[in-house]
Length: 328
Ligand code: PBG
Image 1: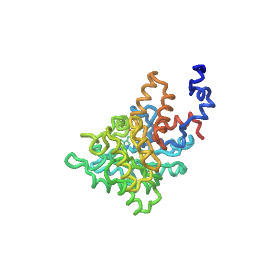
Image 2: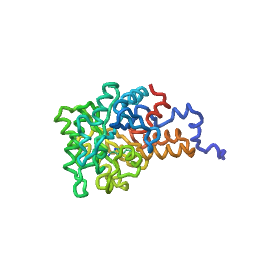
Image 3: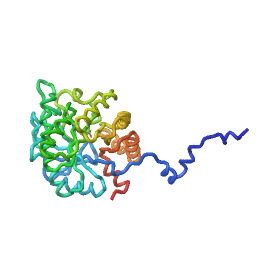
Image 4: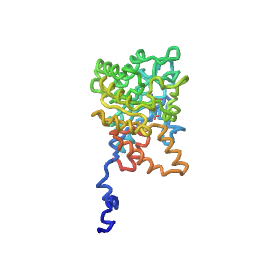
């Protein structure tokens, strides 16, 4: 009879020391994977901490380039911009004005830090007085009439120098409308990252306070996806790719790791995941209370999102990750 221990399989052998753990590690988080979201306000001379996103700020146009220099110095390849305009109206005209807050910010950043990839979020909700992502009539969010405004917004971002546009509105057909408009205006080189599988989520709460973009009536469930649906995510992703999306996104990330995995397996394009405001805020709150080791939890969450299949992660933790990983 062999000793019972001889039959014992010992997976612990490969966990015995950090060097061997490094050798057998299957997933690696890199600063190369990260996109850092930034909020730009119309107010001058401003760096104000956002109450719902501790450690994140509202930046004025005159200060955003300085922050982007710091982001680039950390080795982070890209930022995505969200705007807080001076005024809102029913048609979200602040989104597509040539002198809008995003358009000004993009020009300032590209002038100061040309090597940083500047992505713009294309949506109307921060610019409409009703807070919805499209035109509203009789309490309904209209699809087709919104497309032209989204396309106009994307073109104005590209004209300001945006390197990549990211529609987050969830109107049907917006990727095609934006692709057509960009091409017609000579921006054939500007890629589209579609918020393809974007769910109607409670985890956007802290962002909506930060961006002042909460809907003034109703909710977004008639255009953003039902959290219960996974197969529908594949449908949305395939449609956006057919319409010309270059990259696709799943959003939020944490409660949708299965969706990230399913999308990763279904397509060959890069898949991004948005580690959204509510996910960040929960972690910050627990860490601030001493309930959780914030840094370890952050790496565990982001590694989990990558392990699920994300190639790219949009995260408010980007600077902290870059600092810890020792960016350039
Ligand atoms: C705009 C938009 C939202 C987010 C990104 N783009 C809010 C929303 O859809 O209500 C959320 C980002 C986050 O929560 O971090 N449509």
